[in-house]
Image (cartoon, rainbow, N blue to C red; front, side):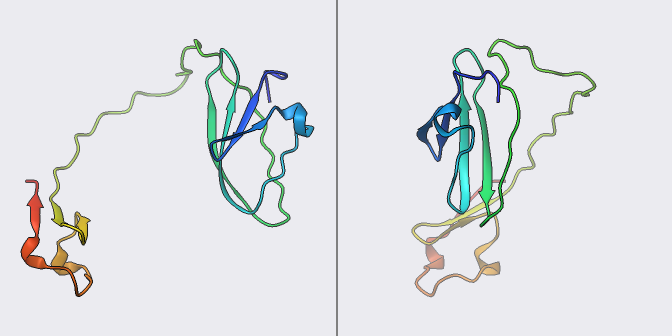
Length: 120
């Protein structure tokens, strides 16, 4: 990772050190982890990784300077699609979603008479 010597590594929100502190090889337990790599004057790099038993994961890259313009080479602007209006169904303390409660397996303790419908 570049810039070498000033990188700070965070795992699951906790500072774990600089790459030189662990010889560039960080050992994590199995499962999902959130990784952040920070350096003064650079954009923070954040990504998720899922660690499997006895399977190394290698990451190589460089942080972008904080004032660098975005790389738009060869990227066509994406049209903005307006959000489709939807109905939200809420039964306080029991259910909230965009699927009508009659189509969902609700707990027996759910009181359908408390249903609130929000939306179009």
